[in-house]
Amino acid sequence: MVSFARLRYSVFAMRFINFRRSYSVLSEGREILVERLAGNQSGITVLGLNRPEAKNAFSRDLVDTFSDILVDLKKDNSSRVVVLRSLTPGVFCAGADLKERKGMSEKEVSEFVTQLRQLLINIEQLPMPVIAALDGAALGGGFEMALACDMRTAAENAKMGLVETKLAIIPGAGGTQRLPRILSPALAKELIFTARVFTGADAQRMGIVNHVVAQNKSGDAAYLKAVSLAEEILPNGPIGVRMAKLAVDKGIQVDLTTGYSIEEVCYAQVIPTKDRLEGLEAFAEKRKPVYKGE
Image 1 (cartoon, rainbow, N blue to C red):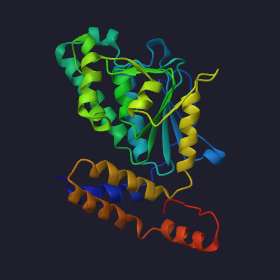
Image 2 (spheres, helix red, strand yellow):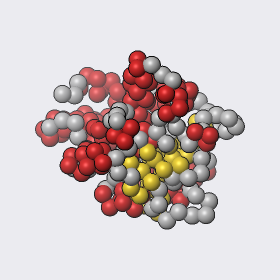
Image 3 (cartoon, rainbow, N blue to C red):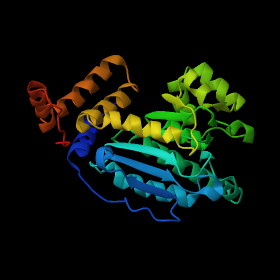
């Protein structure tokens, strides 16, 4: 059952906390590069996975860095849409760093998987929409990370799948819970039990990705599609978009009657906003609204 006191607090925090920290200057050697797009794309924040020597595999350092970035991003009202991509050609994320894991004790493995699971929960719970752009392989934990995003775009030849049972383990960062909620439980079980690897085109047919595109010469077709999708979201009221995300995410976890109550709580947060009044005025004046997230 959803705690309405906690829900109202999270709504309040999302509306009134405005912590701004710039990551727009990209530096070489960082495993997560953060770029704020400008001009007509202002409001789109791009997170670029940048660990090419390990195919962007999750190491302790990468998870720590990513977690720190998300803490600040969650509080940043200037970021209206987040796009998660890879800066490593041909791969999105290969999952856990198995070379590093081989040297871990059983306790360390358990602690790391718990930390990785929490990282993906934090991605899932970002207040703004998050789009994963899959221009290359997304396997194991890398595919789990894509499933934690709100939407996914993929190159038609990108490989993906939950392959953990091949290693005599299971998806441990939320994959066993998210995939059945996107697909039917029976189909999710088939994909997990067989450790099947499939393409972006297959993923669209199954309903896992929102859009599939032919790969281009620069290898970033899915990223460009994700940015295009983000551009469609940008003109809309940012508080409204965030409240819509919160209503959907919380509502699908409960019964329908409770879901209506969650929607009511979220709707109540947009009524006193300046953006709502701006939307009404713009409609009356037959012009495009200018929303400020207020």
